Image (cartoon, rainbow, N blue to C red; front, side, top):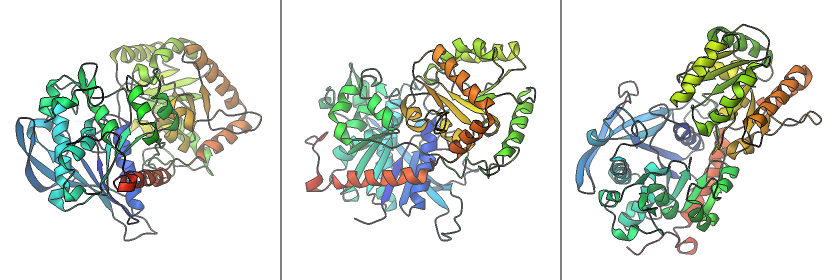
Length: 508
C-alpha cells in the first residue's frame, strides 16, 4: 500500500462554505491536516444556495445525470478550494484542498441547509441524491479513492451504496469506508417512503438493517455498512454504547464494538491562535500572556461592562438544553451574586434568548449577551475571558474548550464525553490540571465548581501556573490526523481476503 493515500472526504457541511455545527469545523480542519501530511484529499459537499460562488471562486467542472428513486436530475459539479497557510518548510506543498460542490437546483437551492428544524420532508431523497452523486464523481474526474470518509447521517448511505451499487466497479475496488458519528442525537429517521425514494428494497426494512421503530434510520446505514466506525472522543464512544446515551442505537453499536474507535477532535491553530489572531485587541503567547489583560479590557468595553479586574466568565454556545442551558438557567441568579462578570455569545431556543436578554437588562454591570452568532465576537470572548463555561448535558467532543485552552482561558466543564477526555481538574497541591470540572448534572454542582475556580483565580501564583498548563496543551489536528490515517489503513485492509469482515454484508 502506498505511503500516501487517496481520500474522498464527504460531508454535508464544511467551514467556511456552510456551517450549522462542529461537523463543519472538522470537515475543514481534518482534510487540511491530512493534506499537510502528503495525502491526496478531495472534499465533496452539497452546493447550497447560501454559498457565495464568486467569493469562493467556484468554477464549473462537469455535469452528469443522477437517478434516485423515481427521479433523475442533472448534477452540476462546481470546483473550489479550501485554502491552506503556506508552509516555509514545504514551499511546494499544496496551497488548497480541492472541494467539489454537488449542485442541484431541485435539492439544494433552498434557504436552509436541512430545513428550519432539519425537517425538509424530502431530506432522505436530498441526501440520498447527494450520496449517489458523491460516488459517481470519482469516475468522472479519474480519482480512485483508497478510502471514503463519511460523516453523520447525511452521508450514511454511502457505505451501503458502495456495497450495493458499486461493488464491481473498478474505481472502487479495494476502497475502504469509515463512518464518523459526530452526534448520535441526529440520526436521519424517515418514513417508509424513504425506501422507494432511495432505490432500496424491502429486505432493508428489518431491524438487522435500516428499520428503526417502524421507520428508516440512515445513521444505521453508516454504522452497519462501513468498515470502520469512529466517534470524536473516547468517553463519548463508551457513552453511546449505553442505554442512557445511545439514543436507541446502543444495541447495534454493541454488535460493532470491535470496529468502533475514537479520536479526539483537534482545532485548527492556523485559525485559532492568540499569536496570530487579527480579531483580538492584542496578540499574545504563553511567554507574553500579560497582554491578555488588554483583550479582557477590550471585551469588557465591547460588552458594555465595567473594566474591572474581576473574574470574567465567557460562553460561546448554541442555546439548547444539550449545552447545559437548563441547569445554567437555574444557577444564573446565584452566579450574579458572586463577584464576577458574564459574557455570552449564541443563539438558539427562544426561551433562552428571552432569559439571557432579561438577565442582561437586570444585571447590566455583570451580564452581557450577544444573542447571535458571528465570527468577529467569538475570538474576543475566547481571548478576553478568564474562564470558559461548558456545562453540557452531553458533548461528543467539543471544540470550545480546546480553543479556550489555546487562548489561556480556563475551561469550567461538566465531565462528559470529550470534555472529560480533554479537561483535567486543577490540583492546588500538585499544580497539575488544565481546568475545572464537575460530575453531577445540576445547578448545585455547577455553582460549587465555579466557586472553587474563583478561589484559584484569587491566588495569582497558582492562577498563572494554571494558565501555563492550559496554553501548553496541544490539540492540533496534525496529531489527530495521524490517528485517522491508521483507521483508514484498517478500513482498507478489510478489503483483502485475509482482512475481510462479513459484518453488514448482504448477498446482492
